[in-house]
Image (cartoon, rainbow, N blue to C red; front, side):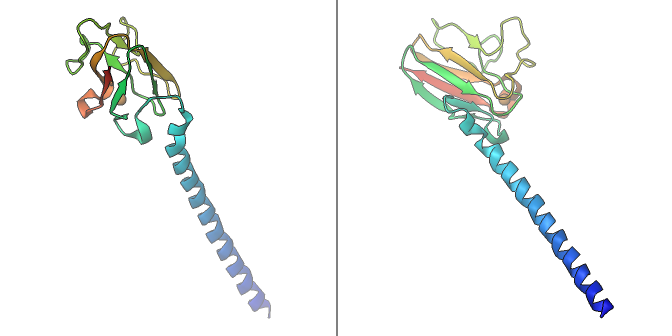
Length: 149
Ligand SMILES: [Cu+2]
């Protein structure tokens, strides 16, 4: 009879172990979902830089009216916004438009990124097509356009 009790105890431990494993799995899953929903913490961002860790701007193409402000949100770290022809030959902007970037002209284009969770804004005063890049990832195709009409 004593043996029987011991067996039941062992089964009990086994069951508990499985529950713990499932709980850990569930926690990881919640973490994954929370990671995806980072985007929604930028309800006012027009463009998300690096959503879900992808090296893209989302949406890639955006159309706005003259005088409108575009806000980029940064749910992941390591990215910036550059629309300065001096810093990348992929950049295009109307001749009479002021170049802009999320870093200052004196700062390193490669090394100056927008901190995680922050935003960058630019107001478009000149109509035309703007092709901007993320300097650290322009080689991987992290390029976006804003059409100002
Ligand atoms: Cu980037």
